[in-house]
Length: 110
Length: 115
Image 1 (tube, rainbow over the protein chains, first blue to last red):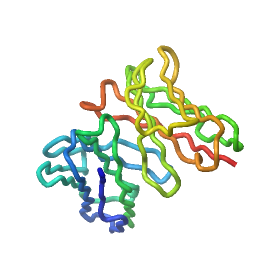
Image 2: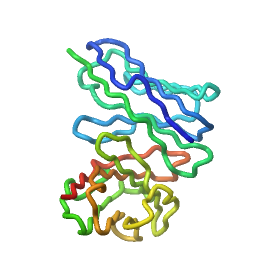
Image 3: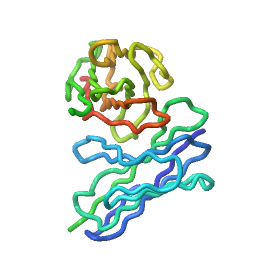
Image 4: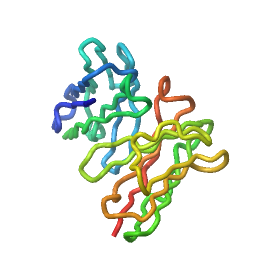
């Protein structure tokens, strides 16, 4: 069964802290996505990765294909970063479907 | 350049009625994806369409659900004879080329409530 596991499930941090959210998956993938879902429900695509590392502003995403693991880092966290962060993968053997993790709920307090 | 548009944003239907959810992709995008988010659950893939073609419908329930993306106009997700279990947020996303090489842009979602 193809599964996407995220940790932690919930995370509370103080403003300014460095945050790491982890995602692991079970079989070979062709792409991994990190998404952000705001409290109002809207979804924003943050990154799509197939190897290496990407950076956008205070967000950094890395992926280790051999270990089947990805991390999303937030530097200098801010209350506006409070959201649910979702990892999704497209498995090499499952056509076009994205398989989603359950999400990590992040709360950044002032 | 407007983002992905979905309407209606909220839809209330009684059991047995039909629900039609519309998705207008970003300008220049010819690939559309539909996802469902049940209450307290994660997102699930439903269907991937290109103009006039269904490419992957492996996540669609076998009955009552259908999707189309005509040559002109928005993509439509149609749910016939809705039941309470269909209550969920339905998101569509679009991309300019296929999902292998490009990220997807999400719409704001349609929240369907079946009473």
